Image 1 (cartoon, rainbow, N blue to C red):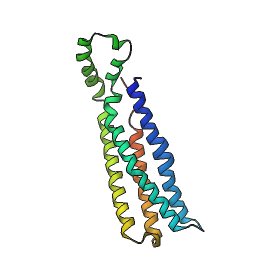
Image 2: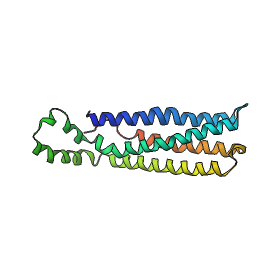
Image 3: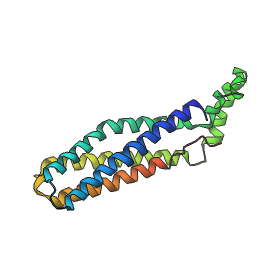
Image 4: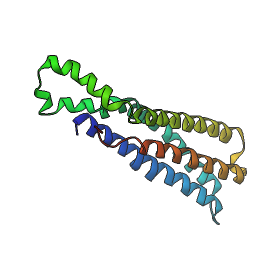
Length: 174
């Protein structure tokens, strides 16, 4: 794999596995579970939910960059930057690199997967914005059903996002 593709996969993995699945979704699930348990503090649970939601502001920028860099980093044309192909004369590399990209990238579903990830990010952002307004517009601390619904909706939308990111190839496919 090329340095570009290795670094891209590392960024994707850190975001999707380390942050989204193992931190964000776990915390949202814990929040939802705490609402149904005895002896919970709604105020504390709500503060936890707000903290989790605040993390999304930074992370969505990170994910936008990962999706934006997908094609450039995971194109088979990146293999032209590795030996022995990088030793090819410059004139040949100039015309061969875009041809390899065109032939190997298109028709393999990469555009569809990238579009699906962008769409999932847009839906997650939209859901985030709606839930934020809802939480601040009501006396959420008094409305356990609202809090449970918010947690469920976040869990569903962000799980879909994780699945869309997971479908992006983890290696250069030729």
